[in-house]
Length: 300
Image (cartoon, rainbow, N blue to C red; front, side):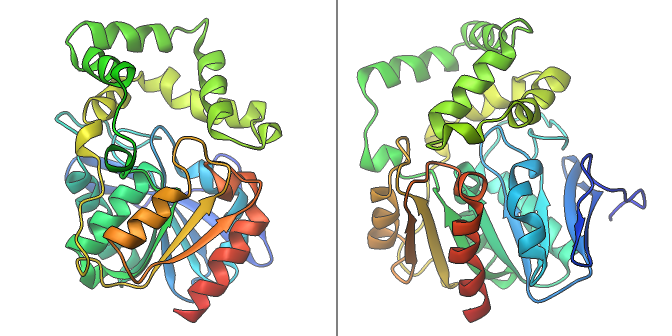
């Protein structure tokens, strides 16, 4: 059940009669942090972040979305401020976490929005828990890379290196060295963002803080299971209305992956490609993202 220690996020958000609150839910693998908007409006929408991210990554669109729909966002286990459980992180475990959240906090079927790796989780929610899924939105979702772009020799070497005991930990320690951590995080964000000016010191600090506090063990565990974090569905498995929102300038997961998802997995999906936008459209071009998402939510 949800705890009773509701508080505002680290950066309080209030506008147009809407407030965002932070709370915690005790789940199967420990406490999970989430944000929720008040008052409740329209359909509930649950936002699921991508690899290495957290609820704060949705901040640019939170209040705008909450004007017409109840906004929820949670930290997946292993990221943000949620628990760091042992064992292999899988799409099934994260989907079960989201399903528990919808049952116990939302209390009714929700629109599930997943970004990048969170798209794999959101798809698993829609496939395995259709009774909890009102609609599905995938934002630059990962999960098709192995099918669309088989790993190069260098990719294979790197994945094998990360999977090795000691060596993987050594690479992680080098990445999280206090002297180079902010630089490493900034470079990673710059490679994902088409609009480089959006990679602000505040954004870098947001992504750096959990690494300083908890280390990168859970990040390494997710990286080691990269081959298991694919989109697993056949046409008909996902019956919910589906929207695919993609940044046209995403270099790591290009819009062709959206076409592949529609062609091979979710034939009813609608696709919206946003120009001049990279991997994180809700943060890079939030106005265009809202224009793609919110009218569609009203229709479905």
